[in-house]
Amino acid sequence: MDTSYPREERPPPKRGPPPASPAPRDHLVWAIFNTLYMNFCCLGFVALAFAIKARDRKVSGDVEAARHFSSKARCYNALATAGSVLLPLLLGALIVTGVIHLSKLAQESVGFFTYQFSGSDDEDQ
Image 1 (tube, rainbow, N blue to C red):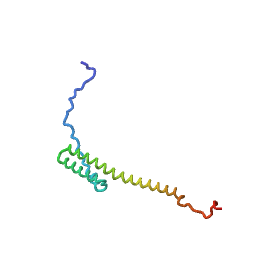
Image 2: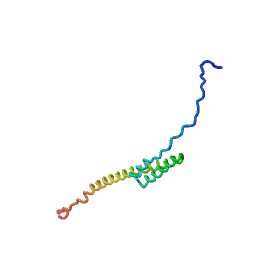
Image 3: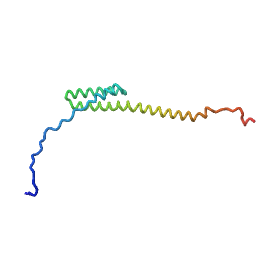
Image 4: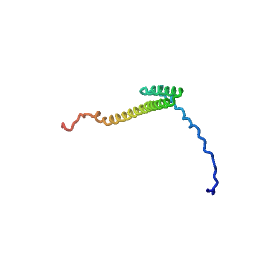
């Protein structure tokens, strides 16, 4: 037996039940916000319906179904938020570029519309 170093006899660590996973989020506040303020193609309303289903399942104790509906509510909320933020920005960018393009086109065509006929032509004499 090797006795060159001291050995400590420790009892094995106690293993209990695994820690419970946290309850899924229902994203209800986000869904209400999307429904009231940024309801792009009714995606906010759909997100609100799934958020309410997730909250009902969480209260009844069905955690797996609550996770499923919570995931769907999060996806629809993200789509509603992205659509309501990105589409007006894209529309604004298109309007700005259209105005810039039309102003350049108008400046280039000024010469065409300001053509003047002079009374004295050198060719006639």
